[in-house]
Amino acid sequence: MIIDGFKIEIIRSKKRKKTIQARLTGESSIRVLAPYAASGDFVLGFVKKTAEKFALKDLISGKAGDLQKRAEMLKDKYMPKAPDFTISYSGSLKSAWGKCFVRDKKIILNPRLVSFPLWVTDYVIIHEIVHLIYPDHGKNFRTQVSKYRLKERATGYLLAKGLTGSGL
Ligand SMILES: [Zn+2]
Image 1 (cartoon, rainbow, N blue to C red):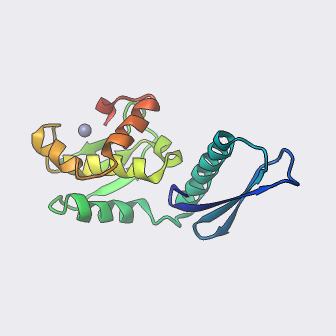
Image 2 (tube, helix red, strand yellow):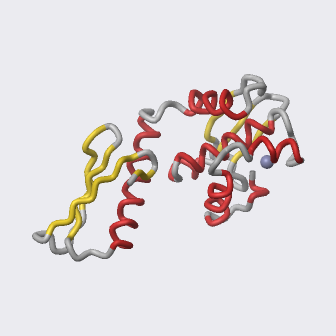
Image 3 (cartoon, rainbow, N blue to C red):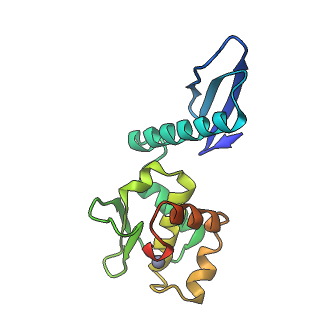
């Protein structure tokens, strides 16, 4: 099982009664030690939370690559004709997940994204990069962002977190 880019290994032990534990066993693998009788849902919930936490640490320590580099990689893949731009998290952005200043070629992201899975942030980044070329949400825009395979899932995830699609 792979979650947030981490390979997850679950070991159930009959000796373990209540406690569930996780530790990093490599750059990107997590070993989970779970009680033998714990329900699948419980273990999965724990694993997801743990992966998010480790992904967040990675992001902060810069192991996941810095934001600018990641965004440039996404630009090359999804919108190569976009101009060069700068991107950063901004605490001033509260009512939207991301914002694109077309004229300044500047993208800012809501810092709440840091605690979401990387594939969700990737979608917000792609969305804003595509705005550098197509400022509205017209047909060309939609065709371009739809190239991201996880677009629908990411949109659903963001909606569930409380800001609507128009928050992009
Ligand atoms: Zn938009």
